[in-house]
Length: 252
Image (tube, rainbow, N blue to C red; front, top):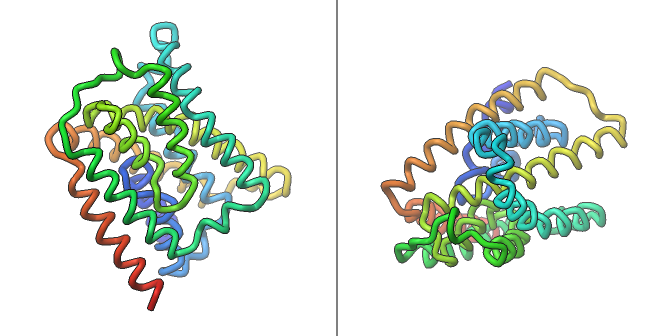
């Protein structure tokens, strides 16, 4: 039970801040030798995060008529990572990207990129400046998040900051982009479980969804409030430190 609690905290927090949820789930599960990080639990954790972002942005989502152009841009922006991700999973290439050395390098390199993207104040806002060109640029760069350590939210925020969006709107773009991505991950995962006759809803799955939902919702609210007052420097420092530690350990 404690494993589910820890995994839910990791998923809920790291999915939406720029430090990579996949790398933290891999590293901590390996380090603590967890037994419950099965595919079904992993899917449940993502479902919880998906429901949290849907709940937080429910007014925008259910006011689809007013925001239909925005969500068309979000869908277009999400297509590259979903298409490439499907092929990587289908040809069993994902596992080849999950080495500790790769996680260390990507954590460090993309932490440094996050620093440079956040170095100057930006004035663009979603309502006026999030056009189809911006959506495609962010969407193409988001493909890099398929490599553990890059961070989906991290690369989305980095790209948005380089495109001159302010910190809060960069985070909002990242959150909105997570909706189709998390939906696709959850759907493909469920289909995979069904095809292998492994779709058994247990107490662990239910707890994973509920706890991941709670921690994801708290993180979204906290992160947006944090960015109204502070820069992304704390996440840069964290990534550089963790990246260097992982690289050092992996080469010992």
